[in-house]
Length: 121
Image: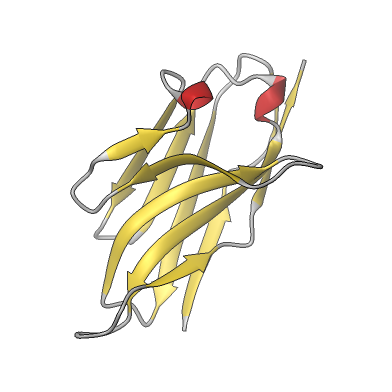
């Protein structure tokens, strides 16, 4: 069993910063791609940022230049540094990871429970 636990969500004023963390634990052989998604009320979940095991990153357009995704493979942890936050960044942020649980096994996608980010104007 694999668990992803997010932390770092909070209420912040526009222009402020937050750093989200997501740690994967359990029966892990290797963690492949990791990412952050978000879902605002009444909207579909969308990709915010993703990082491969090699460190290649991609971002949703509105996050470029403001958010930075990074990872620490020794800790099976992914981070999202969010700067210059805007009210439209308000959402529940979910961590996602593709995890191999053993040699020769296919990777499976796991999700965290979500952490609330609220940006006030």
